[in-house]
Length: 259
Length: 199
Image 1: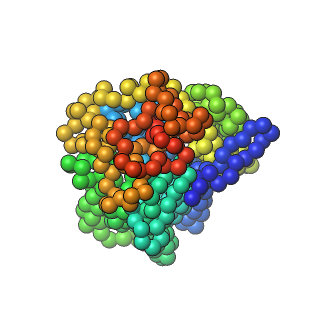
Image 2 (image 1 turned 90 degrees about the vertical axis):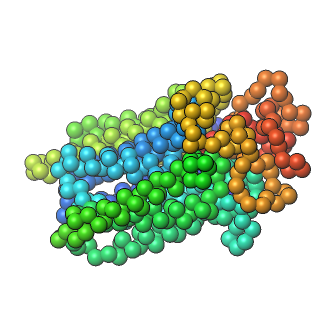
Image 3 (image 1 turned 120 degrees about the vertical axis):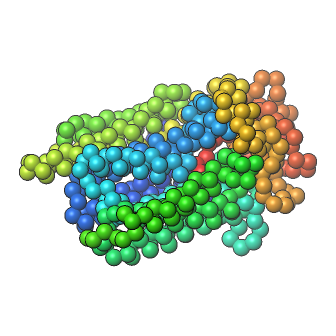
């Protein structure tokens, strides 16, 4: 597995084209286009929906980068560790993106719950594509595993090549589960939406997906809490599940809103 | 605002190209590379808002759509450049910093947080990467991934490292596993810091 798909040549200048960057860009493109299309079909203001997507993308990147910086601060004790050498933690994206979406949609007079409900399938769809980028880049890699579908990274640029052993293709597991989740939400009839129930349901389901896939993760660079038994992502996933289940039982979200 | 989105989209395109060719310049390369997608996102937002306002007021929305398209076209190569050239530059920049800055200045540091366990030799703890039983050909356990390029440590040249090879001239990581060959591309040594992978 090679994290660099190809090398672009512009005269004397050579720049690598990484699989991770390509798939992340593709993920944002697909998720943004899917959201705009869903907004249009739901009769929402397309311009405002696109502006909201822009805010949400910015908020998601800021959230993922910010959570990485926070985790690195906690891990190393240096507040600058995650700033000087940047990275992304996916679970920061829904936090930052959610806040950006909420406030920007309100500012642009879009119904937040309706927009979230009609476009929620874009989140697992984009995430699934992004996870393929993780697989190509050799990050978010799996534990040692010598059974079927095991993969070995040999390129020294891939974090999974340290050490270069056979591993679970964990990003592909997560990608497959997310595609299933996206299919489920895409196949739901586009009616009786608007309360935000579908969005809450998605984040609850994703909490379970993440808890399952965390079991197969083998990264060494992870925040570990409570005596080293719980990773940052497991902690956040548990909170998502509990919060989601509580919210789904709330009267506001229990009965789907009429279309 | 419609023409503003066109201008911002064009600016992000210029920043992306500059970031692409100047990625070898510390700090400046990062600023240009990471700034380009941020600016193009601003262009997308401005274009969307302009489109919405044009629709509400019944005006022509051609310029708004143009600005939106320019910004969207600029965004994707800009993000690609940020995730390749920008990351590379950030690592280069980080490689010039003092590694001791990365230790224990925060109340949440490994010494101050009762919930935090030092997990690897790199963090001051035991090599504890949990991967079950490792095969004999496994490399060093618990080491961070490679740096781009590894920061040189004066007076710690590894005699086994080849000049120009990844990991050459880098202090060997402590407590390597006996009989474990080095990961590919770094004969006999392990880098002191590594890139920050997405999670």
